[in-house]
Image (cartoon, rainbow, N blue to C red; front, top):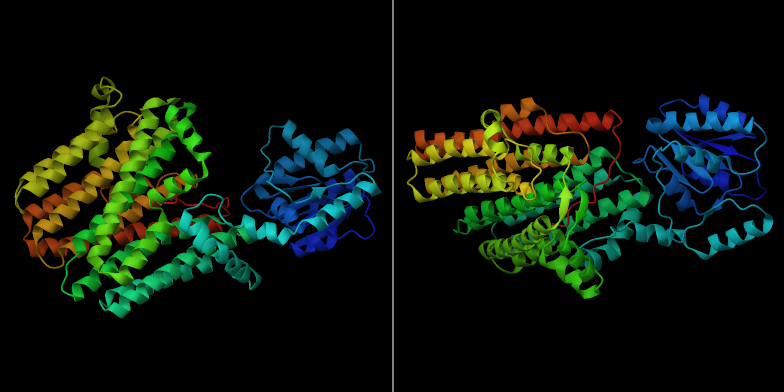
Length: 604
């Protein structure tokens, strides 16, 4: 329930009351500041409340943007201010001060605007949405009112609302091949009361059906899989557009959207691998390689963004060059396309699935993603080396959480903390890279079942601890988490391939998928300002170095067939633990009234 308190003298013929009711507000009327303060105190503390000037003239969508967005504790547009429960105390305090200063006299100018000025004077953050061509005003006289009403008539707020439903920055394929019609699907869903979470779920189900079609291994199945994958992507775009169109943002929705994107793509990889196997072609190594590469790409994105989230003195000639290129229209689209964002990537996968074979599809995917990863990572390394920035404790903590260090690495980090301080600033990523290369190459160059991968994994646990022994504030320390991800996933991939037994690579695929889910979940918690997963969870699944060591122990002690079974059991155990804890956390956050968020999502 939401309550709007209309302040000031009503204007004959005004539509403000009907507009507010259409947005779900229960109306109260106050003739002076004292009465407005009394009515504000009567509104239950767990409800949204708004102060709106009765003389307001503007578009309904301007009111919607200013008064119904669930992401901001306090928000305002000219003539209206609103507060969610989290911002209620600040609003009440500003109202009391204004009432005391004004003596409760009859309202002449806009009380809502005076309250906003008081909030600003307190240093309280108040969200002011970008209205663009939308009108929101409190006219002072009849002539100004007539002009404002004419301005409202001249702008189609529904067209503005549809346009703003589309993400401002997106890939070429999404912008020109999906969004021109998916926005109308979003409006259709809104008018029928569908929620973004329902559309997100429909997108997941469609993608899983596409994966099942690909798993048939028939040409008809591959064609159907490609068509359904595109349909799933259309729905994936629609859910975000529906959230923006109807302002239905939520913590749970942002998590579902981000998590399901990964689940859809990786389930489709598995479907392609199963379909190829039905035709006598084993491409599980390619499928696992594609998942490893794509996940590591995302970790690069996440780590770089977190490292520079709140960096100060953030300057870079490389960034300046990028800004100049953005001023040339065609370069913007070329640069967005060559990183193979989700729209272009899924379109490529769908077309190749329908027209070629799974092996060709994975080859193209691996080449494209490898080029994109090289391009983006090289650019970020150059930016990091040329910028002069001080990174904060928050950024260092986020990178440490993304590193996913278990008890072994943390123990080594504590023991090596003093020696690590004497190492050069670039030491952390170098140590992480060398340790990861050692364990992966050792597993690749020795026979399955030998002791050397185990020895290398022990050394890797030591280097992992050394890499995180001091705060990750160096220019290139954001490379530590992706290097650790590549080492863990690469070791599982190589050992499963070296086992050379049916079922080992699918089991490895399941294990990496379960661990990758945990790593994505960590990212989404950090993005939502919810902190990292609990320490007991990281300990219970061993941390990245503990899992790497465990897999090498299993490979050394078990036969190839037994190793396959052990990988399967480990995948199930890790998957259950992280999934149950993740669902518990996000559902609790949603039910507990956590601040609503909307993750625009990474284009990759």
